[in-house]
Image (cartoon, rainbow, N blue to C red; front, side):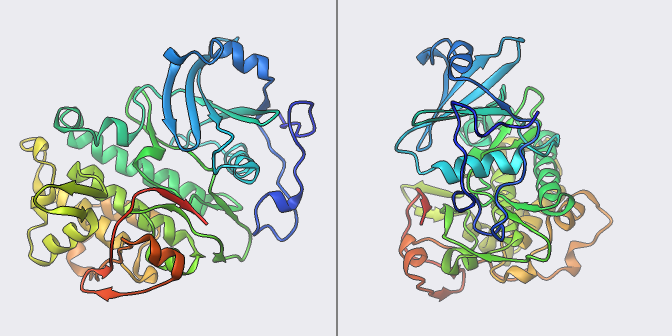
Length: 366
């Protein structure tokens, strides 16, 4: 079903309100997205009951709901103060309303009611990777190596689909643990396409305002706004390191202070101790060789020079094909952005670990 953008509770955006890389052609037709009325969503969520709130962030709130046909959904209600405005709302609709893949969250539709903007998705029983995997040893213990391996490969399949298989291509721009949702079988679903960009025919890169999350930002994109599909590859590399190690991209330790997972992985790789990064709760569940293979692919994806990073489909092959000898692939040092002022001002300071300074954690959207 087409999404009727001129309905009484929706808006009709101009091309300037949409993607800035669409050559003035405006938004593509939105297929398979239903225009919900405000009352439909209000009834589905029981009047937005606080007991049904399943998520909260800078963008607003997420509620569990049930549609009239019995479908259980997650309703993302964007706050009036959210940085995800009309442009990002329509970007998210455009990016995923026309595509369907096992590893992309399914969008049922949306609604604009006055200042309120709402998106309706499939409900994911196991929340997000950041909530379920990266929240303490007891939670991590529930994730076997087989589960983690399939999560890595599933995310790769979803990214390969939007990067390489569909036209126009889609660059997500905010791949991170909290945007990877898990269904009842722990199948990963890439979500939150509010910052995504469409790459039309013959477009290899665009220059745009920097948006994303510190710890996952590709250095060349953070410093110059030069966005390519390799920007998502960098973020995916960070995710691999998180999934295999059980550590967050940026962490704080009383002894170590603020430290960065990419930097730690690089130091262990150089000293041939990368196996020490494997999550200890999985001991006895895996062979170190396979886990280290995934960590090395993660390091390939976060190399400072973006042309050295593999395409997502290649990274997937490197993870899944044991016959490919990774010893033949030279891994160069990663790039690391640790100071938001570097992003704002474009200051570049090279160190043995890449680009580094003082940390901050919020999502930035300039």
